[in-house]
Each structure stands twice: as structure tokens, then as C-alpha cells.
Length: 616
Image (cartoon, rainbow, N blue to C red; front, side):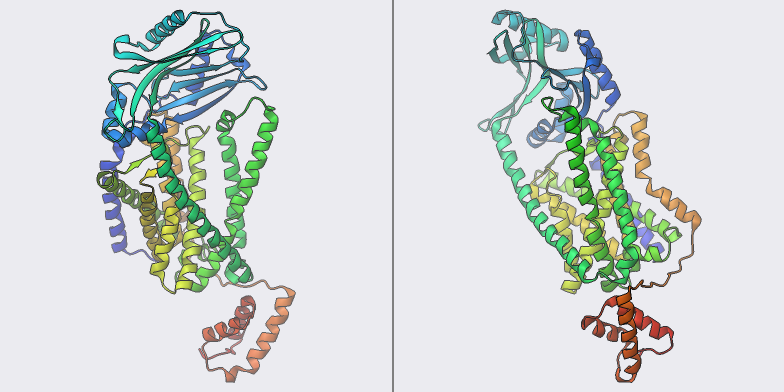
């Protein structure tokens, strides 16, 4: 496959336009991300804070996870818009991103849960969980109220003139009484649906005191009306219904791959590529398993201290390994079936499957060019998505979650989590939907265009679990990206779409570390994973092995060898009776149930012997 100068020019121009569109419309989102305080700093701040409260922090196990206030973000986006949301956050010193640090002990109820700002390192919240029978000195309601007010004034400079006492709650235990007080900021009242009848969001601050101890406090709590939550859940259910339907269809698609795999189990393309795909599945298994340990802190956050710690970890990792194993070996069915179908449906599009590169080499300058093209494909994908979001926000009130900006912050090594996501998504999805499903539907429908549209829609609505509203928008947006990827796949092969998909996913997973404020390690490691495929490209460029396609040969078992001799004898004795081309004769023999491996080998042997079985 040769990429012409005209093609390069078109892709470069489109990539430049896409990059400009992204910078114009999407880049401003990243200015608000501040990850100056990393996991280590957050844990250190939390330990120091507990030490000031005379708590023996080293006596506890710890877990630190990154948290995003999704509910507040979604509500503010929907009601006042993104630009007004940024003004609101700045005016009220309200933060959407923070670290949650947990201190706990096995078989004990007592634990501490602290919230630490990822921007300033300020402790913005605390919850001290104690036994119901724990004893504290008794306070009157007025004394408790005064102590809580003094604490908030000292800690967060709360001005009583700007707040109104909203709620107070008293809970009595056998040996103590807990008092909770919540104040509402007078200047914040954001209506849902604009008329106030559906509820109003309020900005709250408060604390709970028991005896002389402040058991819990929160600098800010954004209280959202119940009507919004009900509306949100209703909208979300639409996306989940779409996702359920698509999963049913994808299950049928997977079943079709298994059926075709059994039907063509001795196909030459399948035989030649099976070790390669087993290797890919093994790598994905190991990378995904490593990712489980990389997210160990998230696992600890879910630990229930009523159960033995080791038993909890044992169950978790057994279940994880079980799920990872079946999740990764699942790639074998569509990949092997896809290689076979591509060989039959698109015989002239050899670069559309890995079989071609196994017959030639992965280290050629053609591969280098495909990798570079993949980066241009990624930039164009980002531009297409940016324009789709911009149109949606202006025309239909689109609103989105921003969790993907920092979704791997809780991992010990976010760059490793990004690699795992990029590899799994790009390889599995491109093989399933482009290599297998597109070839299969083209075979069934006998037309590539409807096959591209159907597969792109299935792939698009398979992403309906992402919280973008209206829920139907996600499927259409990703389907458009799928159509573009399918065009690239059909014209330039499988490497550009896998590279483009990988870099696209890794970019969005690492964008917060690239454009936001963060430590140099996270910035440079994010750059590394984005440009990782270029290492392969550099090797391919400098090695530049010759592109010479090796002949495919079967390895036949004893039964197949016997049938081979029978078929060759039959064809030799009936050469004059066939007035057909070799390909026509091949299809006719296969249609009578002959093993395709035996048929191909027989025809090849007769061709090489100078006694062709049919008319060329």
C-alpha cells in the first residue's frame, strides 16, 4: 500500500483544521484542572492533620483515591452553562477535584475519611466514624452550636452575615449526644428548570460535634434538588436501555464469530495467525492484571472492615483474574474469524489484517508511514468530536461529564492505566468491529456501505454508558467517528485505525496531566504513552526490511493428507472435463463440503507441478 502525496496533504490539512478546532473549543476546559497536590502529598497532609488531632495515624491502614464531584459539575453545566460554572467555582472557592484519604483498621468500626484539595492541599472535609457506644462529654445544644460556629469561622473564615442556619440535627446515643448544624450561603440559589418550582440548589457548610470533638465537617456541600436527580436518573436509564440492546446485538455478533470460527477452523489465514493472536491475548491479560494492582488504592477504598482483610483481597483478585481471563481470550474469536473473512471478502486489501504483516514484516517503512498516518487519524478524530460537542452544546443543550480528564488519577501510575485502556480498547474494538464485523456484514449484505453504517452505529451506541445528555447523542457522535475509521481501515489498513484509536483514548485519559497543573512526572509520563507507538515506528523506519510476501502453507494432519491425495488424483484425472478458472473450480469444490485447507493445497500443488486443474 502506497500513500500518495495527495493523500498525505489531505490528512495533514484535516489534522491542522482539527487541531485548531480543538484548541478553540475544547482546550479551555483543561485550564480549570489543577493536580498540583498528588497522591503522596495528599496522604502526607492527611497524616499531619490527624497528628494535630492527637491521632496515631501510623496505627491505621491507608487508602487514597482521587474523587470528582460529578453531581455538582453536571448540575452546574446544565443550569448555568460551562462558562458561568467556572465563574461560580472561582467566586465561591468551590472545587470539583479532590483526594479522599481513608484511615482504617481490620475488624474495627472506627475510621477517618478526609478530603484534601488537589489544588491547594487544604483539608476540606472530615468524617470520623466511631462506635455507637463510644463515650463523649455532654454539651447543651447552644454550647454545641457555638463551638461548631467558632470552628467553621476559624477554619474556613465563615461569615455569619453571609450564611443562614438551615438545618440542625440531634442524635442521642447511650453515652453521648451528637449535634449537627448546617448553614446555607445566602448568595447561592440556582434554580432547576428556571422557575424554582422544581427545586433550588444551595451551597452549604456544616459540621457535627460530639462532646469536645468535631466528628465531621465539610467546607462545602452543594445540595441539589431531588427533582433534578429524578430527571437525571430517567435520562440515564435511556442510555442504559440503548446499551443493553447493543450488548445483546454484540453478543449475537460474538456468537457469529464463534460459529464462523468453527465453520472455517482449518482456514489457512486462521492457521497462520492463531499464535499471533494468542500472543496478543496473553499480553492484554498480563497488562490488565497489572492494572488491577495499579488501582490497588481504589480496591482498599471499598474494603468493609467487618471482614478479614486477606480474605477480602483474595476474593477480589480471584474474581478479577477470572474476569480478566475470559475478557482477554474473547478477542481470539473475532480476530481469527476476521482474518479468515478478510482473506475471502477483501482479498485485495491485504493491509486490512495482520496476516499480511506476518507474511512480510512489521519493520518496514510502510509500517512507519501507517503509524504516522494513525497519529493524523487521531487528531482528526479529536477534531470531529470537538465539532460535534460544540454543535451539540449550542444547538440541543448538550452537557457532559468530565471524568475522563482525570479518570486514572487514583492509580499509582496513571500512565500505565492509560496504556491499558488504550491497548484494550483499540485492539479489541478495531478487531471486533472493523476486521471481523465489517468483513462479515459486507459478505452478508454484499455491499460495503450499509455494512459500514450498521457497524458504526453498533460501535457508537456501545458507548451509551458514558453520561452525555441527551443520551442518544453519544451513539451518533461515536458512530460518525466509526464511519471515518472504517473509511481509513478500508483504504489504508488496520495499523492506522488501531494507532489512531489508541492515541485518541490515551490522549483523553492523560489530557488533565498534559494541559492542567500537575507534577512533571505525570506530564512526561503522559507524553511517553502518547508517543509510545512511535518507538515501533522508529524501529520500522531504520530497519526497513524488504516487503516480500511469503507463501502461505498449510500444516495438514494425517486425515487431511489422505484427503489431499484423493483430491489431487481426482483433479488430475478430470482436468479435461473442467472448462473453469482455478478460482471457480476452488469455490465449487468448497461448496461440496471439502476442507478449504485441502482444496487450497491441492490446487497449489497441481499449479506448481505444471498440471493446472482448470483453465487459467
